[in-house]
Amino acid sequence: MNQQRSRIITQLSETFRDLMSSSASGGIILLVCTAAAMFWANSPWSAHYTAVWEQPFTIALGDSALSKSLLHWINDGLMVIFFFFVGLEIKREILVGELSSFKKAFLPLIAALGGMVGPALIYLLFNNGDPETARGWGIPMATDIAFALGILALLGDKVPSGLKVFLAALAIADDMGAVLVIALFYTQELSLGMLAAGGGFLLLLLGANRLNIRSTAVYTLLGIGLWFCFLKSGVHATIAGVLLAATIPVRSKIDTAQFIEDTRSSVDALEQRQGHTEENERIHHIAALSEAVQSPLHRFEHALQPAVAFFIMPLFAFANAGVTIQGSILDALLSPVGLGVSLGLIIGKQAGIFSFVWCAVRLNLAVLPAQVTWGMLYGMTWLCAIGFTMSLFIAGLAFGSPEPLVVSKIAILCASTVSAVIGYLLLYRLRRRDS
Image 1: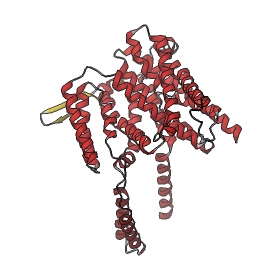
Image 2: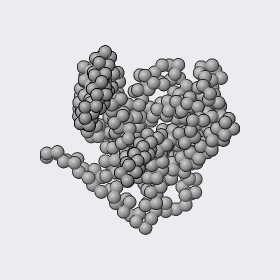
Image 3: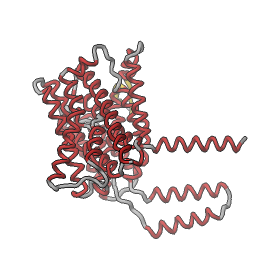
């Protein structure tokens, strides 16, 4: 009986571990939270959906207090952690990854540029005459990397690894563009005093990096100060997350000989099996040695990945995707904002990415990744049209009045759904044909 119970617990643990490590699981949870938000917002209890997120929440420290609605805490607080995580990915890719050399980076960068220019032009084609709605030109420029890579993961090993790497690099380059757009075009009136204080915290963070300080606690505390200053400065607080990521050391500090000696000593002691307590101590010591030689950037990434994928992004979707549909969805999609967002994502993304890549390859400036065909590339461009998280976020920054915001959210959800389905079917058909 005990053996059976132990076997069941082991199987459940392995299943949970596989779920947490799967690329597709984050996208599935996002989808569930989005559906739940839409159901709640259009149910008889829809008033409670709005009331929950407008509930004020206050953090007090001594005589000082910071009070915002729950929705603002999610969008200006928790999403800073998301942008910090994105910044870590960008820095890693630039220094040691797929964007680390001009040869590697050129094709993803040119693809990302096309994927930003195309959607923005199509959006402005429908909204250039209205200054209020024209502010939404940045909405269809974004790619949701979690959903896009999640769908590729559902297709299995038949999809070339080169396509997955290219999509990840493209999406990260796309995130770089989105961060610049937010910083340059969606900034409020500036408070120079708080901006200067934020600059002071940034200098301290750069100094800590220069002094090769490896403690994640130091960067965390200084990062909180940087976030607070940016929150009060008028520059959107999420930019603080990206700037913080830029200061995190990426290189490992390791004495190879000493690490091998200490690890071997612990392994030898573990093999002697001197008791359950002794075994646990040795295993913990080996884990601590391994963690100590990792760079702060890798430690932050490893620690934050589950929280970002399974808590922050789902909570953001649950708080922002709930749109109360009062009129016709078709009318919303046929409005200038609806057409600009939906066609910007569906047509602008694929046309921009495919045409820019095609020109780069035909001009012998770049080559397609290994085993990636033009058909696969076209299918991937549809996945890049899944805007979702970043598009919803930019929509919230772009529009002050509720009507264009609601319309843009409907267009984002519809266009992302269409793009995901068509992208999956195209790549699935290619996989079946080539297998």
